[in-house]
Image (cartoon, rainbow, N blue to C red):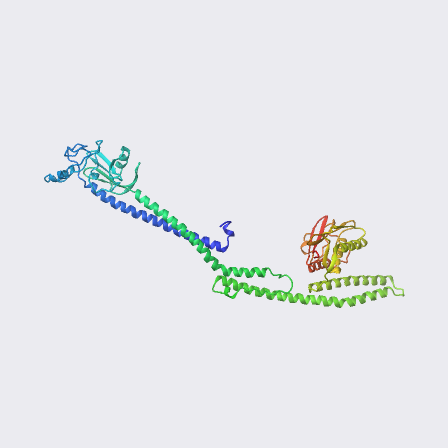
Length: 523
């Protein structure tokens, strides 16, 4: 798992939480079981220690006058007395038993009474004092007696004689559980090693960790499979929403046929609630889009019908105004000027009606002609006409004559010509005289690009996002030299280019404004 946990998928988060919970439970259980095992093993060691301490406390003591390194029978320190010697004594009691076993080491040190006879485990450590003489040693793994060093003996002799088992670290031997008692003969310390306990606990921890890691790995794998299976309904809901989001909902008649499957709309489950809510939302959106489409269709029909019906009376108004203006009868100057204004406004209204009718036809998806059109010829004609209409501007035409990629497109010659005319008229009307306007035509294997650029004052930034909307006008940053603009010229350009499968983009800053039209190349 990589990346920030906040960016993980829901399935990955669930698996991570599952594994974390299992690891926590396994850790708690492991610590508890390890502590319990260690406590049990130490209790067993303490029980054995108590038995060893009891045997040490009842071990036979030395008789008065015995040499520190000799047994009563005069045996060598490393030998052992005749077992029958103790039996031959007549009721000497405990003193008679002192003659059994070796009493000292070869170097003359006395062996603790608890270790002279059988009965003590391997590793048992013992210390006792008789008449101020200290004897300390332990039985190694081979059953041989080993004496303790002075430092080890001093450490054991410092143990408190309270008959309470405690853990003591014996230098060179490791950890021991020892218990010290005080009797008539003096201090007696008995100890058993805790090394076997530590080894058992270590092996247990290693096995426990290995099993826990393997179990967590299996849980993660199985959990991933199960979580993915349980999240499939949510994935189907998301897939439905993704398909709907990819539909062109901003225009045209929209039918939202996609719905979340019925199996994923069970209100008893969380995913089912989401699926049912999404289906309801899609139903409301479809109804709203249908109402919007119906309203837009009615408006388009009204605009188209009104535009069509207005063409005739506007033509009549223009005809009558021209007829009155050309009347042989002398007319007052005010009347002549009034007729000129009527004719001028009729022409302007006619242009507006024609634009509205064209937009209505494009919105209705009316088929355009699909002939081969040379954009170089259209650009040449448009620049020539613009030069005549605005001689105060500087007009440039830049065409890349590449025989391998001629600037040919398939489309409606009249509508594409209107695109260039509108773009040049926009530059002419909204820039002052002396502005340089350049028309550049480029072509490659896929597209033909026409770029109209001027060095005028630019377009207001707040106007750019809605520049191609209908009746969008801006006169704050671009000088509006004439009053004949209807606010439909760029909207018509956008609609015609879109109908030809192309795109148009605008960029502007003071001193540089450019409109870029990209159309699919012919063939």
